[in-house]
Image 1 (cartoon, rainbow, N blue to C red):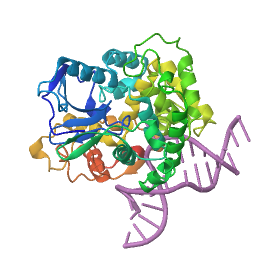
Image 2: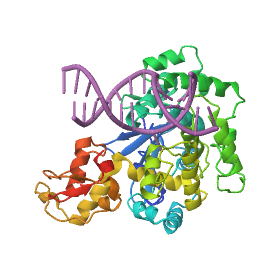
Image 3: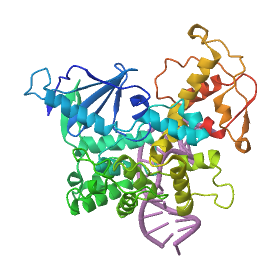
Image 4: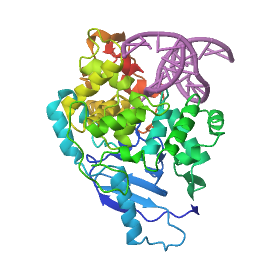
Length: 418
DNA sequence: GGTTAACCTGGCTT
DNA sequence: AAAGCCAGGTTAA
């Protein structure tokens, strides 16, 4: 392991509509990125390299730790290797702007949401990491999932670098999690019932041929270092290879349909995979007329119906579009909507402490179904939220949402009150 | 074969 | 303050 020195920043031309790391790295795809708030920088270990990123409207900036044997200036081959990691991990080949406009032309609801949530890409993560991460995700919240994944790396992953006193670890391979004490250790570390799933799945994967998991990848979007080749023909239920990957993953412990789809999408490169979780099910009911008649709850049949519907609507990269709507619905991003409202109301910083009396025509209300509306009295005391950190507590979010409302009684959805 | 109760835990609400 | 609720589900009965 190496300590200390990060290289100089280097940069890659990239627009925010092609990739927004601040959204993409926070929307529940990867649970491992660390945000350094002072420098607006994101850090994570990928393929044994500590990578640090930041972004402005025209460039993605990146740097890494210097291997001790090298001079301060990175060699071109080091730089090339980092660029390859970045392009692979962020799946930079597809033209996202083009995809957004295709999805928008097919789907007015997508179009409505997408304007606020540009630059969301599906990451091309390591399949094993995605598998374990999403096993951890079951019946769990993003904050705790992130903690669990971090603990896995600290206790079982290789330490790669130490920067500013913090050690950075890589994600542990399956073989590191097959010890007979792993389940009990993970339980002590707070994994709950997922401890057994992780241990059992590690054993199962280790017992298969090396590279078995990666072999389930979309050939057009293979594992890092593998050359792409053509994949099969798109069908309503997805390509042959996707169906096969999905099915094989289900054999593993702790992997049901939703986790299998997350791994297929974010770890195996199958763009048509649409994970249907509670959020997506709610979106389907609220915005796409699902669950209106007999099928009121999410089961195998409705799961497939929702996924197939979105594949028909959005096409081969349906999972990418799904992620945009999913993100737009995350509580973490309630501020995006509110922030835009504030721009509309033209509230100036120096007026931030003044009560808002303006009537706001709000997109918040547009997406609310009438049946679920309830009356809420809103009093706005403080709308000075602009400089607060990204991650907010519930009360902060309510204040922001409130700020977008008037002081009179308005209608507000249950979902937005979360 | 489709439904349903358990399942771990920590953070937040009441 | 203590109890209840909830979080990107899966499993076994």
